[in-house]
Amino acid sequence: MILAKATVTGATGYAQDITTGHHALESDEPVSLGGTDSGPAPYQLLLAALGSCTSITLRMYAQRKGWELGTVRVALAMTRDDAGAESVLREISVSAPIDDDQRARLLEIAGRTPLTKTLLKGFAIDSRFL
Image (cartoon, rainbow, N blue to C red; front, side):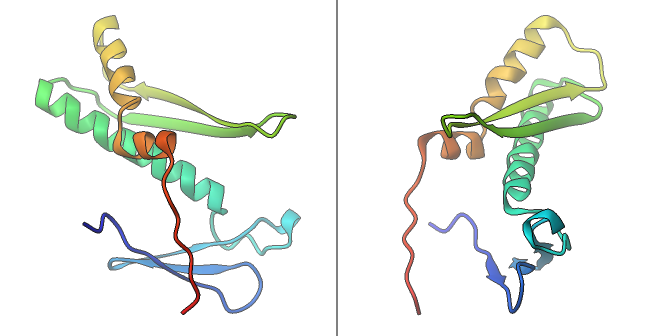
């Protein structure tokens, strides 16, 4: 079963045209790394994917429970320590008042979103030239 498809094309420099389904977007590196900053860098896209998956999953869960969340905001930062270990800090907030039990349950659900689980367990990448 195919979960997602995307095509990425770059002719010159680091700027990339991304097509996925009927959506088009760009990716690039910042000027400080030799790009033209015409779009988010790859790690920024990865964080955006994780953040959107988190927000969508929390909203789906809350709707099933009949909880009002208001605006869901997921702020993410990726870091690398001196030993090369990478980690992501995910900070979640909602604009509607929720109690401590709801907050704890939503944090548990955030740890089990589809993309979170994929990133934590890792996955194979099969690369080949056509």
